[in-house]
Structures are given as structure tokens and as C-alpha cells.
Length: 297
Ligand code: G3P
Ligand code: CA
Image 1 (tube, rainbow, N blue to C red):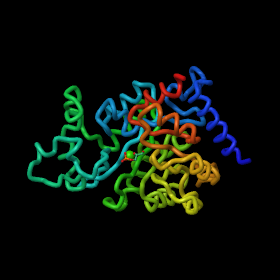
Image 2 (image 1 turned 180 degrees about the vertical axis):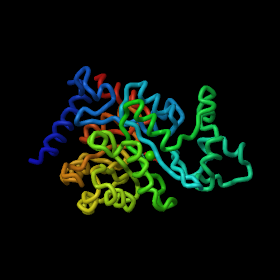
Image 3 (image 1 turned 135 degrees about the vertical axis):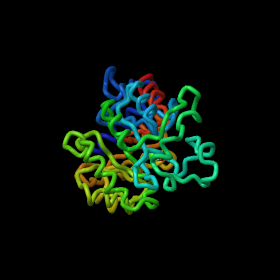
Image 4 (image 1 turned 90 degrees about the horizontal axis):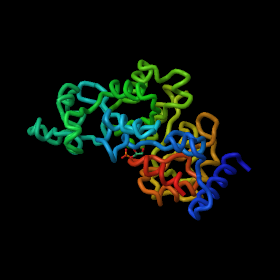
């Protein structure tokens, strides 16, 4: 039997046992309890610890670090003058005060504003008064904070169709910031996207970078994804044990079995369910909730 299949079966059994209250899933003091990777489960703070601090800001990754989590997920897009910034939506309305600062600039698309204009916006007040003054970070500022916090990065290239060349530009910046050296590539960086084309470009330009496809490709098409990606990351609602096993049966772009990170897993019952399916990681706004769920049986 494939090693990954054995691991998945064990994980599934552990998940069932945990649900029945028979075993503690993670040994005390394990890396996963601390929010990192335990080899078979990685917990990723989605958009930073976004339930507790404004998403995609330095505050959100600082919060993830403060909670004891190593992996953070964030989204990169590009300004009108070609600067990379960390933000989820293709427009600035939901997570900044852009309507107040630039009332005549509807529909307030990220790509229509310069970096200097975006730097004037408040990206924290919408979330809570204590975060007033928080800014939309540039990718450069963001990478420096991730490095400062000794974190690991699941970086999503968001809406790549809007930003031709964003893959090369992102890789250039990652390289300049020292994130394409052996130690970062080995265990601290994954680039993901909903766009297979974008990931193919990343894989062609920087074959050593691990990549993850966001979505649920048909089992029949998985072999094609395995050519350029290392992970398949579906919404948890699309998952089943059979699908996770099917993904695990393929070796990915770096010769190891494809992995599965499920999103967005924010409650204990869902965490138990997807761990029972044999996922390798969960992406969550509430990493502490997942940690408690998996440690507290
Ligand atoms: O990492 C999974 C997740 O980020 C994909 O969805 O919309 O939150 O970027 P979204
Ligand atoms: Ca994302």
C-alpha cells in the first residue's frame, strides 16, 4: 500500500477514535499543538489570525504568532503603479475606509489606486477601534514581518487575471527578500492560487517553489495538476475521505504525494471531520479553536 494511503488510514482511525473520546490526537508539546506542522497536520492562520485581527494586515500575522501559530495565509495583488500589496478583495471597500478618503473613486478597485494612495487608508478601524491606524501592507513590508516573526507563508496570488506578470514580480520580490533560498523553500513557503495557469507559470519560473491549487479538480484530472503542484486545497464542504485518498495517490511536482489543506475550518466539529478524512492541513480564521479541538478530547 502507498505510504500516504497508510498514513491516511491511520489518520482516519485516529480521527474516529478522537471523536469517540478514545485518544488524544496530538501528543503534549507536539509542534501541531503549538500550531505548526506535526508531519501529518498543518494549521494555517487564514489571512492571518483573521477572526481576531483585521485580515491581511501585519496585526493579523502578529496575532497568529502571538497565539503560537507558525503558518499564515495571505493574498497578494497589485496597485496601479505596479506595487504588490497584501489584500483579499479586488476592491478596497470592505476592509478600508476608501469610500471616506476617496469618495469619487468608485468602484474603488485595488488596481486603480497607487501605493501611496492605498498607504493613506485605514485597514483596521472597520474591524475594531483598537486597530485604527492599521495599514494595507505592501508585500515587502509583509515579508519582513513574516520573517521577523519566524513564520511560514502560504501566499495566494489573488485574481492573477487582473495583474499580468504578477507571478514573476512576486517571485522576484520573494527572491530579493531571501525567501527562495534552500531553507525557506524546504519548509517555509507555498504559493497557491485558484488559477491553474498562474501556478503553471510559478512552477515554470521557479520550479523549486511548492505550489497549491485552490479548488476541487475532478479525480480524473488530478494527474494533470500533479505536474505543476504539490497540494490540492479544497473548501471543506467539497471534501470526502475518498477524495482525499484519491489526491494522496498521486505524486506531486516534487515527487512526494500530493497533500490536501482544507479551508476554511473554523469550528471543532469541522476540524474533527476533515482530520478524519485524512487531510494534511487546515486553513482557519480561528487556529486556536482548531488547536483546542484537536488537543482536547
Ligand atoms: O487558503 C484558502 C483561502 O484563502 C481561499 O479563499 O477567498 O479566503 O482567499 P479566500
Ligand atoms: Ca486567500
